Image 1 (tube, rainbow, N blue to C red):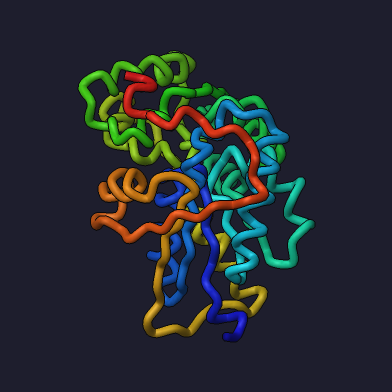
Image 2 (cartoon, helix red, strand yellow; image 1 turned 45 degrees about the vertical axis):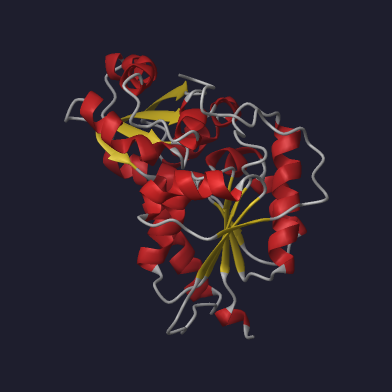
Length: 280
């Protein structure tokens, strides 16, 4: 198979990266994709950088073996603390979501709020990227450790969810932000809740859309765009295929066929397996 017709690898800690996958599919309808959710180790946001880097490295090893022609870190946490460390270790292009999101935010506002995982906020990557583009804007960041477990547990519609979300958004609203960046690819799953809570004056930025545009540009630059008439998408996880299939249905609009994959190079302790009561 020629390089052009190889799939694009997309990976995240769980279902969050599906927001990036959908944006990529809309922008690149002739491309095939291979999606990997590292559900055995979700959430990433509370893990130290060396663990996130190790997980990213092992997933990329597996993706290259499939093979894929490009890898997308559809995870802000991985993009924040692992991308620059591991991208030069692989021969395929590897893209992250931070820079596309930062560029889009600067075009929208002057007082930019970022909601993200503790690891992403701790890396200060969004603030640095935004201020490098425009040092005159103000950036306000809030860590939201509850959001990913809540989404992975398929509890978005729980009646307690709005109060949990508002607890994190309130400081940003009080700071007078005019733009809010989803600094985690899971968070668009909460978009309806967030939109209902925020004043209309605040513009929402989903980096997934801008990531898809960046990937398209990279494929064109490297002459890697596919001409397939019948592209495909395959789903793999490191944890429970059944749980991922249930959690992903709302985003995908169908129940995907999911295969479990054991990555022998990963010996990092798994996160709490039962996310259904982790927050609520």
